[in-house]
Amino acid sequence: MIKHQGNLYILASMFLAICLSVAAMACSEVPADTISEAESIITDAVLPPQGQTESPAEETASETAPQADAEVPISIVPVAGHNMAFMPKGICPQILVNGTLYRYVELAQEIWETPSGHYATIADGKTYLPEGFERIGDISSVTEEEPTEELQLQVGAYVSGGVFTNPQLPAAVYVYLEESWMDIGPAYLRFISEDLKDDMCIRFEGRDYCFDRGNTGESEKLEALPDGCISVGFLHFIGRDAIPVGDLETNQLMDTYGFPIDGREVFADPSDASVIYLYEPQHWAQGEYDAWRCCHLFP
Image (cartoon, rainbow, N blue to C red):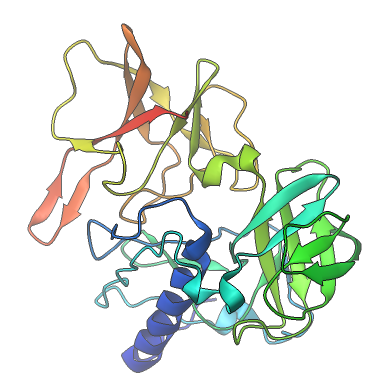
């Protein structure tokens, strides 16, 4: 059950969410001067799979977390790009697991659906371990250089904790930090390998296309489809920790405005395999308008 609380609590939660999001985005590939297109954009949200568990240090049921008020706009979150100033000693955490390097992307926070139908995180201090992930050992050591030892964590502070993996989802790793890090903790942190393609992958006809929220890079939106485009089906969201392998599978959770991307219609030009077009209606104060997001091939 979700309980509604006052706007002051919600605004305070939103402010903390901005701080955490900016820090997490410091490891991303998105240009530093990019911001969201509209006030309803959500970044760095995690949709927890069924059966996930709470952090050991958090015993209070998350059911009491407030649902975002429909009249309170979701925060605009500036993207930090490669600005390492947000990280201790300017180091973006990485960990070596089974010979693969995983990069920190975000806290494993719960996400809530607002009355208007889009997603929002609640900065209540709780983090979660998705179902199916099991502890494989402790952080072996910490270093300020790129990790070279198994379960070694690159980080700009002393921390300890455990490492969790799921053989069915090898592209994601969760690390539980027992000490406070960046005034956060104890907490679960999410790390991903390059195979997840930053949770922005759409698979179509054996190729990987990038859905990049907002007008970043070549991810422009169109008010009309190019001539010759046809509908090729509807997206199927398979989870953010999964690698899309089937046609029209995606690990992207939401669109530019924070609305679910699952079931969204996709269009393509049979003569041009370099781009596909995702239906993404534009949500503005004046109303909703038809538009399509260009999703280009991953390099």
